[in-house]
Image 1: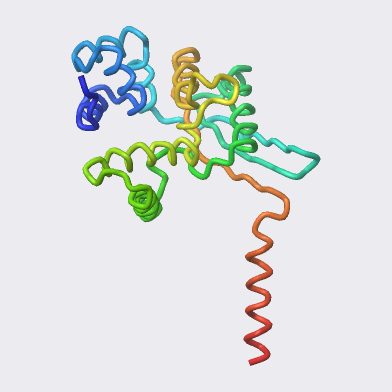
Image 2: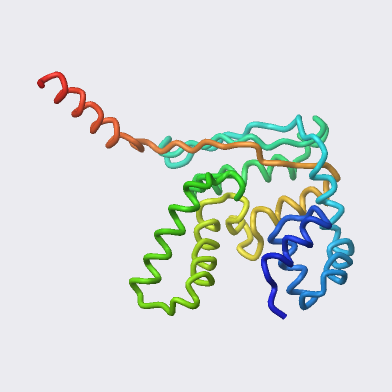
Length: 215
């Protein structure tokens, strides 16, 4: 059975579980939504999703510096209690994510953070790519959907393959940790710096200012 976006959305609304987990459950149960709900409950994912609705105001800010100061990352990972923030696995997860950001250069924490204008721009690009490649117009929507998925996997931290286990996404690893620790855990924000990054733009702005003064 084809796993449609509407079916995934329906399961997500009924369980509160993320889209990727919902899709996996539907694939596992051949599209049977009731069996998918049972599967999510049996595996503990639905329970973890309920925890995800609770307020996470504690946590840590993890820092990671790579390459002798060439790349620096700061990330804030939240949990519900200070006790959980001291958990070695929680700390290790935050450190792993900082390393992941340094290596894989995500731009956003989750899919919902990607501005609509960026998504539309990406759609326009992949649509034109498909047309230039001579793809069948009848399949353009499917092609765009597939290439957007790849875009999200590159640009969104939670949808990237986890740095220590490529069979898991970062969201999968987060869900596992929520199940294990028993508290809501969320990645709030991060920033990544790379030495020399953005200098070209600064030089361009400087040149423009000088030219304006000359005029």
